[in-house]
Amino acid sequence: MLTQYYLTGLWVLLLTAIFSLVWGELAWGINGYAAPGLSNSQILSELYKQAATSPIRTNEDKRADATRKPVEFLQFAQVRPGMRVLDLATGHGYTTQLLALVVGSSGTVWAQGERQRPAFTKRLADHPQSNIVPVTRPLEDPIPDYVPKLDLITNVMNYHNSTYLSVARRSSINQRLFKALKSGGHLIVIDHSAKKGADLKTTKSLRRIDQAIVLEELQKTGFRLEQESNFLRNSSDPRNRAYFNMDIPTDKFAYRFVKP
Image 1: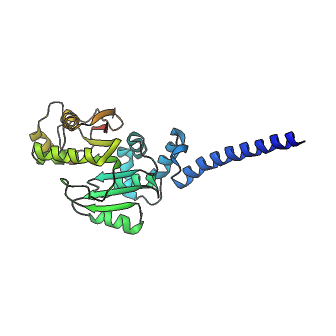
Image 2 (image 1 turned 180 degrees about the vertical axis):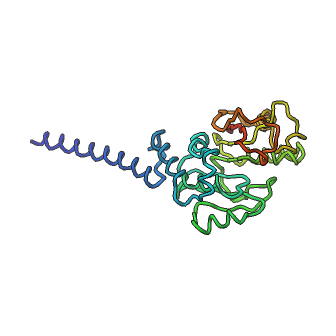
Image 3 (image 1 turned 120 degrees about the horizontal axis):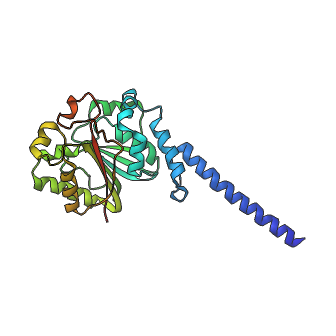
């Protein structure tokens, strides 16, 4: 009798544990965050979809989704609940808000810009998100001293702007980003692609950059290329016009670097 009671108790404990695990995973999909131990690709995929379809995102964002592919971006960046993230040159806040929706209440996104644009200010006023911290700082010194080591830095459609600086100053920026990341942290760089071999003069006129330049400069800093993705490629783009004069989506490269 005692043995039967003991075995029954074990089954109850086991079933309770299984239920708690399943419920925890479901709660993560609903609320957008959960303990790191519950992470798996299926739950993350659902979380990314929920972020992309969030009702707080603007109509302008959703129109841009067709060419910016938010779910694929989040998958490539490997964003996780609880992460500490820096979004460089946040602009109107498209990327910043997506990141914040995924990292959840246990994470933080620092949104850097040399000035706060009205559209970004309005975005936060319309739907305040306590895990977004606006940072008004120059690109050459983008990270406040109080920010802890970061899990992720995103630099989306912006690297070409740094070519207006000297090689030494651009290298200094990259070194700051490298230092700001924790070991194993990632840097995402996405930009409008120039033709292979295009020089920096072309970059400045077309606001595009040869991806080989980006790769070389960041590897010199110490970053290791972990993955390149084609999810924003467009072979129909002749890559000979400025991105803002295009009537089709530009061809874009996407790199994920890791700090060893």
